Amino acid sequence: MKMKQLLSLLMMGAAGISAFAADGKKENGILVVYFSWSSAQNTKQMAEEIASAVGADLFRIETAEAYPADYNQTVRIAKEEVQKNARPQLKTTVTQAEMDRYDTVFVGYPVWWYDAPMAVYTFLESFDLSGKTVIPFATSGGSGLSDRNLRAKITATFKDGLCIAGYRPGESSRRQITKWLSGLGFVE
Ligand SMILES: Cc1cc2nc3c(=O)[nH]c(=O)nc-3n(C[C@H](O)[C@H](O)[C@H](O)COP(=O)(O)O)c2cc1C
Image 1 (cartoon, rainbow, N blue to C red):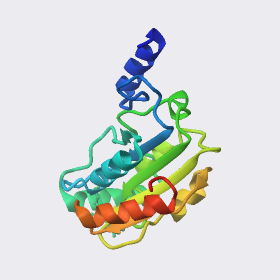
Image 2: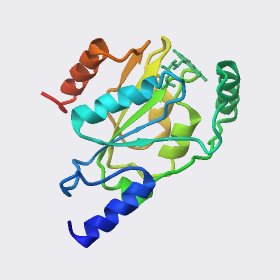
Image 3: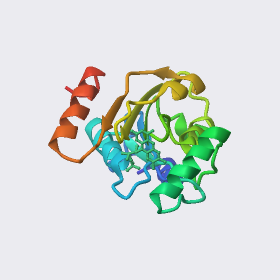
Image 4: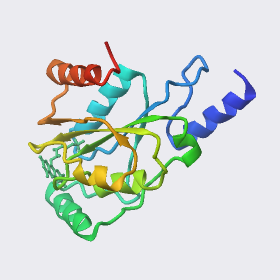
């Protein structure tokens, strides 16, 4: 491995994403970023399925201040954040240069109050994503993808997303994900 690649690898490791595959080759320009909160980690699991199907790097969006473990408290805080159009601080992020290694960004979130959690906006709004393709995906208790606000706030080329309501890991969700990715031309 060349020194430059090694340095990049170390830097990316610090930021939480790795730009190079184990053999030192650059990844295929696809990043999956996601936020996931509940103990079931539904969106995390969906994100991992997608990343493994398309061979993408993964980055987890986390807030600097964790939401309470209590469901009702988090529901209340999330509602206040929507009302205030808040941008909660993040634990870590990546630089624009790191983001620019990717031209396709899958953005995953649990639907919170018929929208993406505000932390997803904190993350996405810190980059210039124009010229990139953004593909939303979500898990929910029953709502649809709820990506209207996301499409309004983020300047990028959006493609059709997928929401799995009542997500459960397993064959049925894997089939839905594969069908969607194949419709987008990512998998056979
Ligand atoms: C703060 C909060 C708000 C939510 N709002 C909605 C909603 O508007 N519509 C819905 O269908 N589900 C809603 N849910 C349920 C989550 O979207 C669902 O459980 C999701 O799969 C959780 O994903 P996670 O395990 O990645 O956190 C909400 C959950 C929380 C905690």
